[in-house]
Length: 138
Image (cartoon, rainbow, N blue to C red; front, side, top):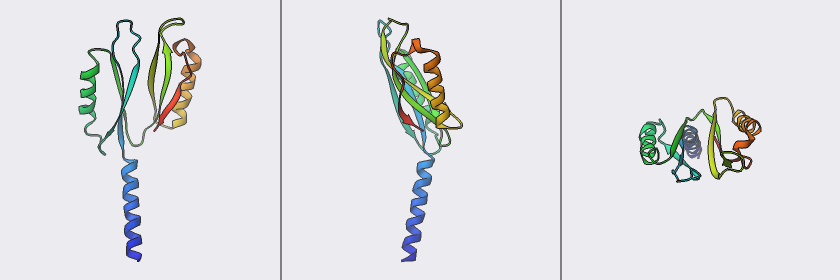
């Protein structure tokens, strides 16, 4: 009975370690449109535990999206923090609106990333048609 308990505990620790060591690639892309008002999309890709396929995945997305629109990616390591937010943006007041995604990384805390998002929203209200809505937290 004790052996079963020890094995179960070891398996739980191993699986917890695997969860902690996940690496992600957050990519934000936008198709080019004639009026420049195309909506953005985000892609969350789970990378293998050592993050080795980061450049490979990044290159695939860049080749697909960079020639026609815009592309930006963020590597998220297991010790990194950050928030992904969605909002409706606009170029200028009265200009066209589009759905936008932003990933905001912070090395120290999730709250640091949240504070930065709020500061941007407060300092540059003309860029945002709606308040940013948090989608993912790392």
